[in-house]
Image 1 (cartoon, rainbow, N blue to C red):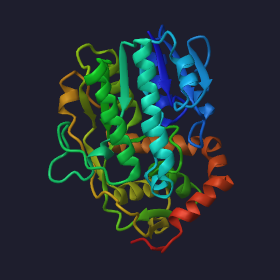
Image 2: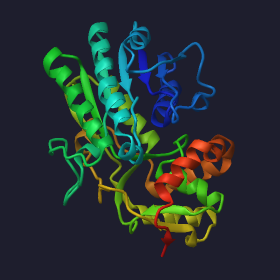
Image 3: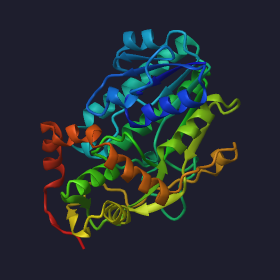
Image 4: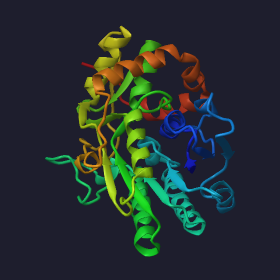
Length: 338
């Protein structure tokens, strides 16, 4: 199989490339990535070669996409702007990449006649999970520009199945964690700052709850959806059903880095902050998938990975751009954590 992986130099994309390379050695992959701030070629160290080729390009550029998709059997579409905080201050980039970029990819896939298009959506499209974890047929109620752009892309992908018969399958996953995650996201940010004995900025009261899944379990689900016959036109939630509040995550990170909880600092809550994200993955589990890494184990291993790979994340945290972003977003209304 020849697979086009968009956004394959990012966090989940690079882990997916590694997952497929280790388990399907005959597959060939084309990685298409613009290498924006969150894309990092070092994420693909040891993978590039005869079976994995890298092309630098933008999913919004039809010519770059046409070159990359030529001869491919499947597309796994990760490429997107993904950080809620950034979408609040600069929503235009999210609409462009997440919606327009997805349209360019779908058009190219339709013309190429691929046998599977896996669209990576998110549980953010549901908005609040009230009462029960969200099901695939629940209404979409996105609360941030990021979530809204992903909801638009999600439904656009489905429309290409309904209108053109493009063999699309859509995944909506909870919060991923694991190696190679850009350190503006909660877990790598808190680990890095704890290791450096710097304040860990926790929004609001820290009781916002997320449905956490290790990136390797997510990759296993996507690999299944890419190869499984009969799932075209379907949406599948991907969840380990391991819910935890952000405050719990912060406290465990302090524990496993040997740092005091006084590093946890409350900052003003962000606008539209969803209180609880959670999805029900029973539909996917009926296909034979199940998560293998529980949160307590996976989080501890992730802390160890970041502690052992400081050279991977330290340049980012020391960069002027990252420090400016952190100052703008977090250093408002500090108060001591409890």
